[in-house]
Amino acid sequence: MYEFFQGLFQGLLNGIGSIIGWLGNLFKNVFYGLKNVLVTLLKPIIVFINGIVYLLTKIFDIVILIIQVIFGLFKAVAGVITGIINTLTALKGYTGSTSYYNLPSSYNEGWHGVFDILNNAGFNTLALIMMFFVWVLTAYAIIKIAGGEK
Image 1 (cartoon, rainbow, N blue to C red):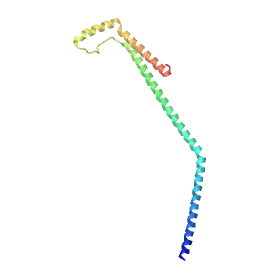
Image 2 (image 1 turned 90 degrees about the horizontal axis):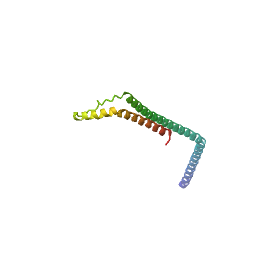
Image 3 (image 1 turned 120 degrees about the vertical axis):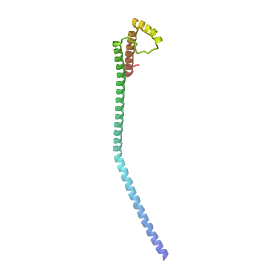
Image 4 (image 1 turned 180 degrees about the vertical axis):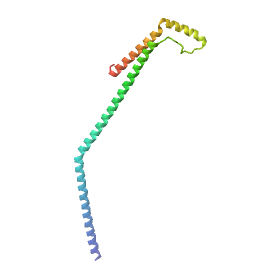
């Protein structure tokens, strides 16, 4: 008799277990199918949104690089223009004075003698004119580099 009840309960429990397993597999397959449908429907939208975000990121990177290049060019041009203006003001206001040199007294007489001869010969003006041409050639080289010429 115990074997009968044991077989009955075992068969009943096995049947309930297989029904629960079947229902579990059914729900699992339904949810997997629903997930696959949603992924298939929404994947192009997600890919499109990711593409737009990537495009906007790269556009902002390019804009930042362009702004950095423009500021770099302005800094270079401002440096050249400042140098040319300093050279021109030095050409205009050069007095020929060598009072800013501080030499020992034994060398002062020879130093002043050499500079007096060079000032009378016009070497100070020649040096300033050559400095002006160096700045002009530098500006020309920067323009060529910025323009992409070799």
